[in-house]
Length: 140
Image: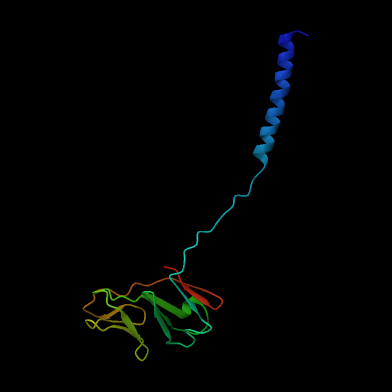
């Protein structure tokens, strides 16, 4: 056998082996690790001890959360920034009238956060909620 023929056969065999290895490597599907980005809760409420009755509210960390219905589901609560959009004063919830009031200049907001009367010109900024078991989280 001549050197050229030997090298051709050797190279062909090695080439087939490399192609087989590459095909095998490409055919293995690796399951990518997927991580769900988690947004830390702005406020967390334990529904076993807080917001147990309709009309109960919590105001903390710049957020006000009110229970509007029964059951531990997100639809039973509403949350807003507790700053008046007029001048940033803290609004409070008035259970008797189910309204939010700003004592600084007298703006009032309906239970759904919409403007009732000014001097504010817009409603309260609504926040999103998530309920898992007995934990309510305000997420943004």
